[in-house]
Amino acid sequence: SLSGGQKQRLSIARAFIRNRECLILDDALSAVDAKTEREIISHLQEERGGCMNIISAHRLSAIRHADEIIVMNEGRISERGTHEELLAQRGWYYEQYLIQEIEEEIE
Figure 1 (tube, rainbow, N blue to C red):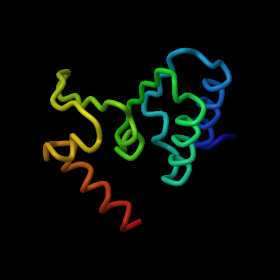
Figure 2 (tube, rainbow, N blue to C red):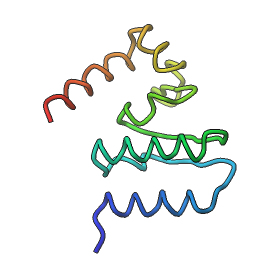
Figure 3 (cartoon, one colour):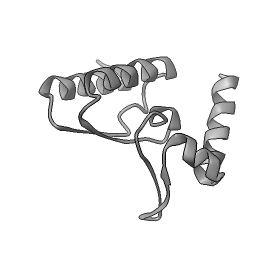
């Protein structure tokens, strides 16, 4: 029997093999550890750099290198920009980023 993280990695591998123009990952990295997440994101950037990739994530580390990040709140866009732009706005994204950085340091 596969673990949650193994199932997610298998699903992502299948999506890579299909090599579609647009890849949608809906919280697909939630069950993998931080190191594996970094490896998957790095591979995604290398292999699909010129393609459209839409990533829905709760862990901001999964999206920090995106060309554009859209923060949704109750079905509406509340913030939009690059990682650096959103940090400079000091809104929800900034606050969550700080919280998640502290949590990673503790682990």
